[in-house]
Amino acid sequence: MKNIPFNKLVAPERDYIAYELSPFSPELIGIYQPLKKNYRIELQYMDAGESRQGISDEQELLSYLDVLNSKVDVEVLQQKTGVLDYVDSSNSKKRSLTQNDFLPLSLSLVQKIVKGKAQSCTECVEIALGFSQGVTVFLCTHYTLKLNINDLYVSRIKYDAALALLVKRYKESVKPISNSYVRLKNRKNHRLDLSPVLTAALTFTLRHGRLPRRIDSNLTDEPILWSLMVDEFGAFKNGNEEVIDFDGARIRYDDVWRVYRQTESKYLVQEICNSMN
Image (cartoon, rainbow, N blue to C red):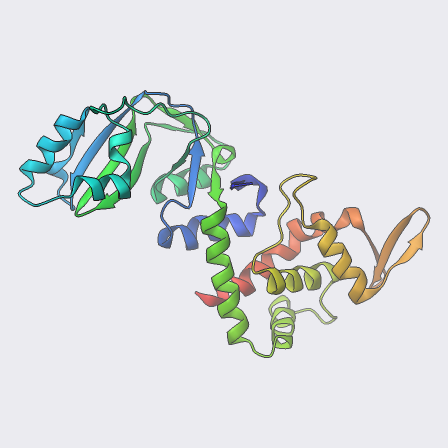
């Protein structure tokens, strides 16, 4: 799966992505909307708002660049922004955007949608396609889009790369690895050992370089978490199912994700992500 539905990630992870990671990782969060050809392209030079201008075809693009009084390599601009794919040119027609196109959103719009939670955010959307040689290329919708948190997707490539680096730095800072379990226990301020779910989630993260996730029944880390829990704490048969006994409570396989999502994910995200900021 190329990109991850934002609402499938646990709440502490969503907040970390929207408010901590997104400012440093452009094009991390976006949408899939079948815009077809109902959009316009606008160019802006540096931070000069007065230079903002709509471009409809290749000739207008060349004229705009000529006015800038600087040598802008159109081929490089195309490589960095794909601008020629979105305007009429001598070689091809304006690109038609389908529901298969990932359209990255600005940080301000992402945070507005996330803060709105279930409420819809209705407005014209502006998407930065890229920046090259002082020129930023924007895609702007002609009409308003009604967006909410269920419309957001996270770039899996960018997010997994960022998390892998974060976990690597974390592991280096807490050597030996056993210190990470002590730190997490102190963070939770728990008199007992870490719960099987939290222990397994931390072990998973340190081994795989990312947080556990559950997209659907076929894309879930639940089996791995359960296996780690059984290896560490042992399990016994209770009727027709296996259970793990911890502090007098019996944990079933079906409890794993609920416990992680509702309580334990908060401590794990705080330890791995927020402690490194």
